[in-house]
Amino acid sequence: MPGRVMARRLNLDGDGQGDLAGHGGEHRAVMVYQLDSYRYWEAYFQRRDFEYGQFGENLTVDGLPDNGVCIGDRYRIGAALFEVTQPRVTCYRVGIRMNSPQMPSLLVSHKRPGFYFRVIEEGQIGAGDEIVKVADGPERVSVAEIDALLYLPGHPRDQLERALRIPSLSAGWRGSLEALVEADKQGGNAGLAPSSAPPSAWSGFRPLRVAAVQRESVDVRSFNLESEDRSPLPAPLAGQFLVFKLELDKNSAPILRSYSMSGPQDAGTYRVSVKRADGAGSNYFHERIQVGDLLQVSAPRGSFTLAPNDRPVVLLSAGIGATPVLSMLHSLAATEAGSKREIWWCYGARNGREHPFAAEARKLLKSLSRSRSLVAYSKPEDGDQAGKDYDVRGHLNLALLEQRNVPKTADFYLCGPVAFLADLTAGLKSWDVGDSCVHSEIFGAGPSVTPGIASTIPLTPHQPAGIAGAGPKISFTRSGLTVPWNSRYGSLLEFAEACAIPVRWSCRVGVCHTCESGLIDGRVDYSPEPLDRPSEGNVLICCSTPLSEVELDL
Image (cartoon, rainbow, N blue to C red; front, top):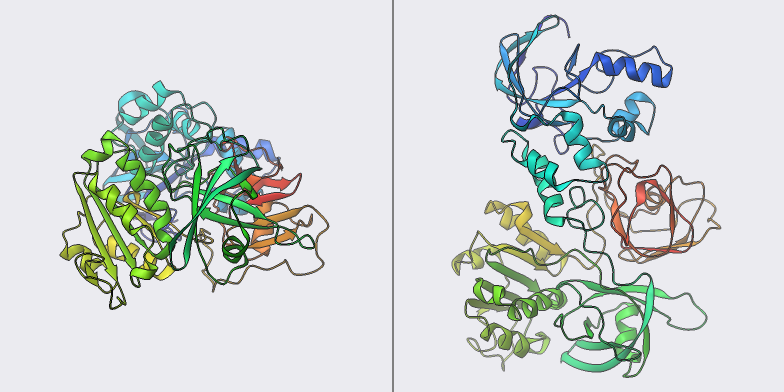
């Protein structure tokens, strides 16, 4: 950019960020890349066609190497004062600029990511200005070191703790490194996929016997499952779900259905509760499953689980959405820590006939000294008693929560119909409840994350256009679609996109873990190999292809 330009708190005048969801903000105001790295990549790619800004940076500088610049260092350039806050956030765009899709991975593995400045003092800068260091960052952790600490395997605890002592480290990176410390030696990369649950108790599916069937309401039944030899099943985490492979008849392929567990964690058995609806899965459970039947069942899965802290807990659900939060209520009632927390049970149903677990929830709440209950019936019947069966007439909403003084400092756990989740999530945001304190589970595919791609009207999942593939079957369990793999697609991510499956991604080459998804069953091959493998039982769909039939939690 010719002449001089104003460096402002959020960007350079005339050189702002396009995708503010993944870039920009005070701690990512100005992106910096070095001429030395230009020369390095020119030699690596045997190219001589680079131009300033080739790597998406705002400032191309001579000096300031990633292995010499440290987080918290301050530099005077022209009339502005800058502070180093974090390395570059890798995404697919740099691969497009370089005409090399592997570029996000190469920047990290070759330890040349570049970094961001925060603008401490606004002022004009220009080409040729001297870069003067005015302060050293505490702990002296270089940009290259902290980038490797998050993205590459190892994550030594002492180095993580050292990095976390740097006051100027951006909030995003601080959260990622804290997640790695809390995860300790658990597999996978909790800093990049913080919601990943511990490894599954078993891979694929195993037979479990139906030990009991119980009616919970007019349209909900519970099914207790035990191991074939009646030995205790591995304890799940409260809020997790099971995937069932159901053979409806001998002439058709099995279908996959997911149901949340609703019982206690220490029973040695699993309980799922199924509402009868129009689907083949729920009808199969209600019409055909009997005590003694063997069902093919996955290990407990899912990351909709209780956060380990002392904050108040608000369990918000409606309809059959009560199942995972009821499991959480069991967990809280069974622990001393739970008994000390303020706990709110907020539930919405149409009427008493359609209110499952009413007596069970009341009994659990009575065992918790700091518990509160708020039950809403939208259409109570003549036999439903206000003050006994339900507390208010109508629907659960933010105004009702505020009227009842539900604490805004709580962790909120939401499960229920799509509109219920959308309304309450938006309401909690208006309360300034942080994203990290709002946890939700949906019975279906989750929202897409596709940075920089214009949103479109969601399509019904379908087989890819053109001739069907001849490869192994790929099942997208949340979306209810099973289709044969087609080798013309380069990855499971590309295949899912062709099937209109909601997906999440950013780098597309195995760096950022945004695409990390549950691998319920099957084997995959990676190309390229991820920089840091996902946790056991998960898969990075952006850089993997199937080696067998695959069931994905998508």
